[in-house]
Image 1 (cartoon, rainbow, N blue to C red):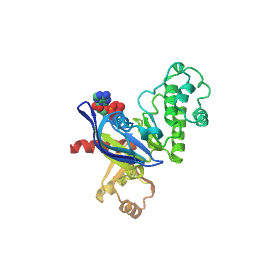
Image 2: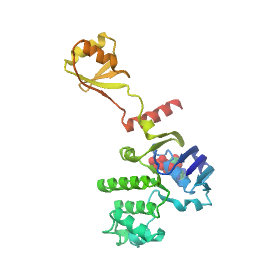
Image 3: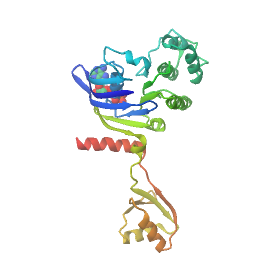
Image 4: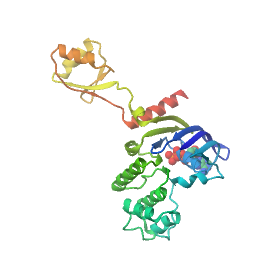
Length: 293
Ligand SMILES: Nc1ncnc2c1ncn2[C@@H]1O[C@H](COP(=O)(O)OP(=O)(O)OP(=O)(O)O)[C@@H](O)[C@H]1O
């Protein structure tokens, strides 16, 4: 559906995106992650034909260029501050772009905006303006929705509701490209992740591949005294460390430990894998990349 090939984006002479290529298919929810200034907003703007770039962007087979935005009729977007007319009501703002009255009314209801949608937008809080921006991006059942930091300023309930709506649209085939610094939020919805560092894409993988790295550490608890177990592990050359009052075993194969404990009639009460958090995994990718530079 969206096919991005070798794009280089420039601000004047400054290169802001270097040789980026990726694709997005219907129903995919792609998380765009990277440090401040990495180029996330720039990539999004480029997809919308808002920057000077070289390379090729096609959406449903149609080229997007800085002067040809025809293909974007099926793309919704919220980038930086939503474009809202303050003296119009929320509904009038939406009506300016809506092509289907039923879709508009359904969206207002679905986003829980009925109580204030007829008030002038200038009276809205930051969070409500943000919600209106998301509503603008979701109008007319787009095939692709681009959201730059969509959860900015949203309260807990609004965050949960937007997450559910994103998921609903995606199950019906809408694709999403979402940037966020709130990794825990993205982690709950995204089906794949693109990591951007210093203008370049350093990783583009489905989320299950990203998180299914091999476990190399296990937390061990037994019925025996920790000191006794430590002595036993030490005597059998099994690497471990003692952290936060827990024995952490460094191994990918737990069979020898189980066998050893069994031989000494020690019962296991816990032998659980310690997985990297999503945040740690992202930091590791970025650190590795920086180390290689
Ligand atoms: N209009 C502009 N003119 C010149 N340089 C710009 C412009 N907009 C962004 N940049 C530069 O391009 C680079 C990428 O910026 P961009 O806003 O895309 O990063 P980002 O990943 O979205 O960052 P953040 O997480 O802070 O929002 C930065 O070095 C930024 O200073």
